Length: 351
Ligand code: NAP
Ligand code: ZN
Image (cartoon, rainbow, N blue to C red):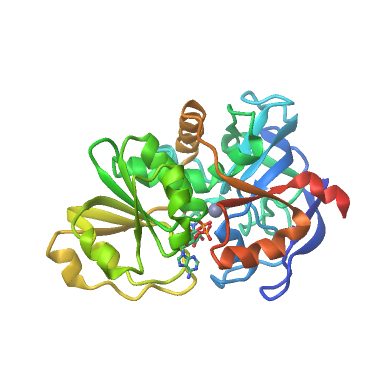
């Protein structure tokens, strides 16, 4: 077993605090990684606070992991000691169901194993995530990092990047299309950068007027303030596709009205409480579609990392020591993140 230091929540109403635990010993097909950086996803907060009512405590969140390979098992052929690698939201899946066979492990018929809050892999506990100094992962779920000059800013690609890349690709976003991205947070700012790099005309839709300049700098061609009824009215029936990243329940009708005939709005935000049901008439009169999307498969995650390396895309980050994680969550709840917190895991040494 491998002694590991991290931070954990012990219940939904307590702050995260230092926590020591053990990782499984390195298996033949495993990669052991010294974690350098871990991004802070809103899903970490939802889980630590038990928003979704399914948290296994103690909970060590973190699924935007970047680090250096420290050891490899005898049968590992894709990685060697010293490689820079990433781990995202999944650490295992059955590998034989039709979804896994298609490279869609996130839809594994037998349920994929989450990097945290998943069922344990041979141990008595649940899986523990990246707010820690070491992780052991089977090689099929380890990603190669090719743009290593700004590693901390690469970390958020492992969830925020793939969760926005996958639906943009699935719904064939590209040149000639007008694409709306709703919410300028961790996911939203990656959605803007990626949709722009794919050649679309990008419209950022936000509740925060003070994010307008940042949105334009990040790659949006236009910004709509969703609380301004006049601006929303002016953009009716104008968008081919909308990627909705908002982390809280909100009115979907006003956003659906922005879609052209046959347009699709895909939800990736996963609020604790449901959205008010959208009006059927908003959908049927223009044959609009409301859809959802979950992270992305492993092969597509590698494709996204390579796409980002090629297009020089990383996340805009604010680096924090692990000791500031509880304050970071409070700021995230206020939408006060520009645009992803990343934990410098070296800060665990200061405990
Ligand atoms: P985030 O950084 O906190 O960003 C969420 C954004 O939503 C905010 O910046 C804000 O943008 C907007 N927003 C509007 N009203 C809000 C409210 N009342 N409370 C909170 N946000 C509000 O979060 P994130 O890490 O991007 O994650 C967004 C959501 O996606 C979360 O629910 C997360 O669990 C989920 N998620 C889903 C997947 C998936 O696979 N489907 C993967 C990862 C995360 P403006 O200020 O611009 O309005
Ligand atoms: Zn996430």
